[in-house]
Amino acid sequence: MNAKRKQIIEAAHQLFVDKGFALTSIQDILDKAGIAKGTFYNYFNSKNECLRAILAFVSEEVDQKRRELAIGKEVDSEEVFVRQMAVRMNMNKQHHIFAVFETVSFSDDVELKAFMKKQHHTELQWISKRLGCLYPPKARPYTLEHAVMLVGIAHHLMHVWKLGSNKDISTEKVIQYALTRVKSMIKEQIENEKPFLPENWLDITNDGDTTDLKKEVIAQLNRLSNKINEKGFSKQQDYIQFLLSELQSDNPRTFLIESVLMSFEQAFEQTELEHEASHIVKMAWKIM
Amino acid sequence: MNAKRKQIIEAAHQLFVDKGFALTSIQDILDKAGIAKGTFYNYFNSKNECLRAILAFVSEEVDQKRRELAIGKEVDSEEVFVRQMAVRMNMNKQHHIFAVFETVSFSDDVELKAFMKKQHHTELQWISKRLGCLYPPKARPYTLEHAVMLVGIAHHLMHVWKLGSNKDISTEKVIQYALTRVKSMIKEQIENEKPFLPENWLDITNDGDTTDLKKEVIAQLNRLSNKINEKGFSKQQDYIQFLLSELQSDNPRTFLIESVLMSFEQAFEQTELEHEASHIVKMAWKIM
DNA sequence: GCATTAATTAGACTATCGGTATAAACTATT
DNA sequence: AATAGTTTATACCGATAGTCTAATTAATGC
Figure 1 (cartoon, protein in one colour):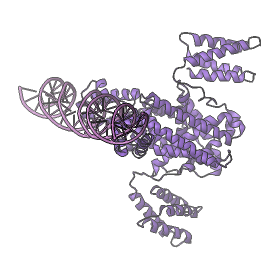
Figure 2 (cartoon, rainbow over the protein chains, first blue to last red; figure 1 turned 90 degrees about the vertical axis):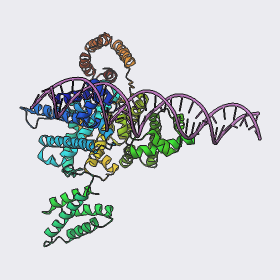
Figure 3 (cartoon, chains in turn blue, red, cyan, brown; figure 1 turned 180 degrees about the horizontal axis):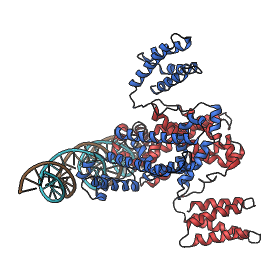
Figure 4 (cartoon, rainbow over the protein chains, first blue to last red; figure 1 turned 30 degrees about the vertical axis):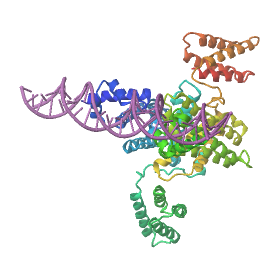
């Protein structure tokens, strides 16, 4: 029974790789797997659900191969990281995941959309974590945006390579090049700049409904307000009160809130509450 | 008569922006434009051809706006470049071009594929040329790969931003950040490395049929061989003869050719024929 | 004003798509 | 052997891109 499911997945898998998701019809899958339509819909409720199963399967394969590559190697080995990253990129290339991703982003299949979003999310955090192993400790706040740049460069570079040549280039070479480029940014960034993306940009879940998030922001602002009541934080207190009233008004003026948020964050710089204030600001950004 | 065409394009345009290309049906366009099916197919042979017309129209708008932005400004103004680049990125975002691009890459509509490839091609060369204005002369060989990285970083960064927030971020801010990062690579690259992508990577047209290209490579190798006949280039001559015989054999061993090409290029370094040899190698890469 | 030509219309039609429904045939377990 | 679960073949639904036709309307030349 599970064998039948496997049989369907394998047929669909092969077809998606060969012709792409959109151009593979259910009938193609039925023919290839040698089954009837009813059987297919016994195991999957839709073509999209079948795709999801394949993607999940592929992800497990990626994890497995990455673990194998790490066996007996140091955690800060750049070579291992490059090969690990290549595993996913090769899979994505082979499965035309980017095409699927973009195609799906307009469909109304919220489940599939959430699934792919989560996958992308997880992958970026994995890369970010691995970069943390390769980078000096001071570069920690920049690993997320470096992960983003690494993927962006590598992906687009491969794309352009194919634009000019029929021959595939080694994924590892592309990733190694991208990594070298990205690494060269660290020094300048540490010296001159704040991170572009907050370290926890992807941590705070965001499913479109921001009412819960808004409540949380308001609650934390109130908590912070009480905390600084006795101390001499009069300016900061003003910011908090303004933000609270504006957030809870019927028509919050977002442009005002945005502006005040920045001043608010600055006002707490180099105080004991800097981290707490910064966290509130990051959350507040998301509801605007 | 041309007014009718315009009328259809405008309706379709609006719908593609609102619902995306794939989810807009011909019927939607007919309803919106208030025309009959026959009329639509009088002006366009397919939905894809209609899309192509819109893309061409958008491209003209982009060019126009970019020209306007440049009026009275210096050619090396970074601010102008950032805003010019943002024009296309905003258009692409608005028209969900990336989704279309990926969707189309599997279809059998060779015309549309070639059209979009050409657009991407042209855009990268435009960015590359503009980077040449901003960069020091020595960075010239790196402008193409910097263009690729710039687009890759900016695109992916915007994508990830949306992954974590509902609020749009300013395209200009993202591009400015990407540009700052990319610029910081120049020094290290000039000092240590050869360009990853040859400067003319996109110049040599490549439409899948490489027989003409192959003939050209062979012809140029022969010419080079004659040129160095009287001089003391015995090692180089060996390489050329090997490449010629291997290229013209029934089953060219690509891995061998690849390896020899690198040695071949090196052998001409710091000679008067360095440039010529390098050009041949770049062409040869494309036929493998 | 009239006649010819071109453009436009509504709608029938094809084939394919994803997905549903059903009744019969098959398989496994008890 | 009886029951329950699976699989099959097939008909069906609404929607899709695209074709075709016959009738209507608009533009053109004389």
